[in-house]
Image (cartoon, rainbow over all chains, first blue to last red; front, side):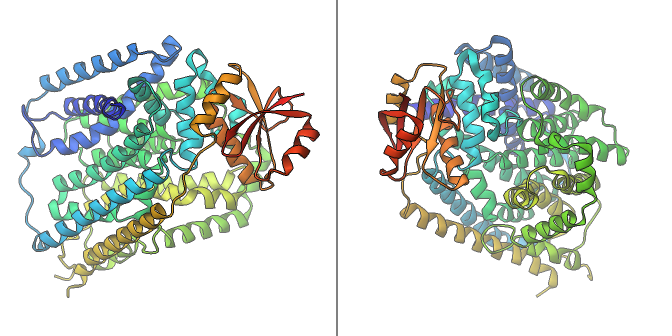
Amino acid sequence: MPFVVAFISLLVPGLTGFALVRACIPGERYLCRHDLLKLCLGIGVGFGICSCMFFVWLLTYGTVHALYIAVEIGAAILASALAVYRATGCGLCRLPPLPESTLTRWRYLVLIVAGLTFVSACVSFALESRIHPEGQGDAWAIWNLRARYLFRGGDHWRNAFSGNLSWSHLDYPLLLPGLVARSWIYTGTETQSVPIGIAMLFTCAAVGVLITALCALGGREKALLAGTVLVGTASFVKLGAAQYADVPVAFYFLSSIVLICMRDRLPPAGTILAGVTAALAAWTKNEGLLFVALVPIAMAWAKQPVRKFMMGAIAILALLAIFKLGLAPPDYLAQNDRAGLLRKLADPTRYLLIAAGFLYELSHFGGQGLNPLLPFVATPFLLRFSDRCGARMAAIVLLGMCVGFVGVYLITPVDLAWHIAWSLDRLLLQLWPATVFLCFYTADVSATPSWK
Amino acid sequence: MRGSLLVPLGMIVIAAASTAGLLRDEAIRYAHRTPSIVGVPDLGLTTLRRIIPQGETLGFITDRNQPEAMAHRLYGLNYSLAPLIVENTANRRFVLGDFQDQSSIPFALEQHRLRVVVAAGNGILLLEAR
């Protein structure tokens, strides 16, 4: 029974998100093939919105209460009504069909490999979840710990930010803890199936967004190939099953990039949705703050209006500001004084160490000895690239993220070598789904040689 | 073979091999797994909750020497006992003791002037100031 209730607790935000995405990107009266993309986007959007709603509830009423379930169900009904009202036809269905590529001849091979890879990844995910049901390292020491404080704390939920727990990254936002704690209100007990289910849905939704978006933009075989590359990245599946926040944040990075790249095929509300997903990345992890700052900069660079993007992001960013200024202690980067900062910036050994760290992590990327970056290294020589809608912006954002990571490492107050060893592989993985999308979106992997 | 066909083929081969490798590793780990308990087992937790007053801040001592192992145990206890807070100090009315070696218990009790209240499982003892 708790398993069924846990399922319902995740179904409600999933439906809310799907309805909200359908309200922004109208669909047919009945379901169409593009609703799969909207569903995958909706899972993350709904999870994020419900986590924010739960935080507002805590701020307003000061404790968890079963009445909160009624609020969520009410929100789901309202969102569904809005989606039905806005069901004026799917714009993506009206686009001309994509031309067949030479990759189409490989359809069955790609389909079989993709199917086997997905099944194998699902089994690996399930085994990992059985071995570590409470998640690994950061998952229980940060996210599930905070969820327990929010759920068990009653009126004293603010104890989750007690200075005695400073080792638990108290400045990290509350998307995952809030999401888990609100699901436990449904179940009444702290069932482990909730964080496992959330981790599984975020992992699947990330793969789903990648495949369905590329299916709409570049064809089915190309999309399946991209999905196979992502699922075939062992560290992506492992981190997902470990219940780390890196996969959810990767989901939001990917969703924002996809929506930006599809903006010529979507109504203006699609850009609002991109703002929502980018802000939800910031509500998940601090790296998201960098992302949500970079996207409008890249949009302004590409002479695109940023107003709609900001409209989507502003409410969630306001909530994040309340959290950061009212509850969370200052970020560890704030420990730097001016003299120390200048000394670090002028230290050439730090630059060398960071460069070595990037080289090491890039050469060991993937986690199984087989580097999924290898085929991508060959693409500039073997494939054609085209400048498609939003691709330049997306590239600027992803490169900007890497530059931002370098900047943080330069000024980090903790031991630099330890910091790089502990985090860089996960930071790169956060960008991986969006990078795979961008490569497949712009490169012609359909076996049309550049010399033809 | 056309050069550009190598790219998708390389992607497929690497993805398939990588997934198969992950599945093999997970299967081996699953077959040889030992139960992974973070902090205190459920049964011990019920006992501790009956004894420790609400809102109490607990202390923590251990006979482990490695800082990472010590931190792992301390964090695990905070995870188990939330919303109670466990601090890395012996100067509290109730202290949680984490002992790998049974013979180190009498010395630790004498050193910090503590007595054993109850064993909570997974090597954890609830101690009280004398």
